[in-house]
Length: 390
Image (tube, rainbow, N blue to C red; front, side):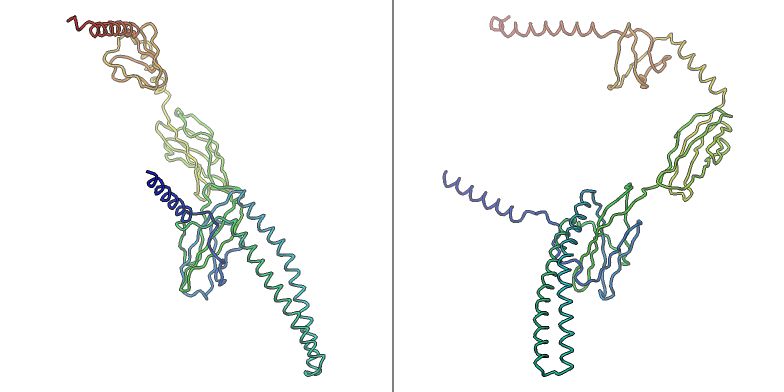
């Protein structure tokens, strides 16, 4: 048993070690250097839904892919802080490098002067040695600066979300389309580019922030109306995310007309839809209108009154109440709350109350309870006295 436990422990340790080694871990990306050949030129600014990436002719035959990743304000601020820090760090190093470069240029100029006077003189040799010494110092500072640039770039890249392999979109002409969706206001995103050539695959990335106006829309003051023939109503249409005006129209001017101020007039009985559409047809708001004759409304009212006063018949058949409605039993009348009315009823019935006598349910529960008690007592008596053939 001990050997078995020991073997199980060893197997568990091996499994855990394997999972720890091969399990995926979070990283920005595993790209050593973005666009090492300099073939990809990303746009400096993006202010619209379409932009373009330029690919160098030196790339030869290629396939171009891109993807957009939107950033939260926190993500964008973090990236901006990294970029600001990197620029500050590199500014001091660049100042030192520029000083060394000036020293190299001055030393080389001195060497050239002495070389013109006498190539074999001691002064020429000394100028040459001084130039070479300063140049070696400059090379050391240059290497340190390049290493710092690479480190700072890596730190900035690490703060940028990595591309998602399944999200690449192909566009060999370099055209990039950005779907802002319902975003509006200040919007941040990354543009990832992938270039596949005969020499391999290169990547490039840049971070952008732009102001999005949002998709235009038209908000209507009413979405449905009921009018009588000859009636009027003024609709209001409010455009959003645009400075365009709206154009009013009716789907059936024989039923309803509308002017360019939203004034509606009912002409004859029927239905029609009033539309307020943006000038470029990019969005519209609608209102469905039903027109009735004035006499039709009175007749409908009379019919409703007749239904209310002529409820003398007792409902026949089954009454089905939706399970989510409240049932109130009061003096033999069943009240149905809401607009759901009972089904399968013959006789007159309005939307709120079914007249007539309906048996109350309290008596049924009492009878059932008494029957259940007698049945329980009988069962215990039978179990206890059955050996006496009771």
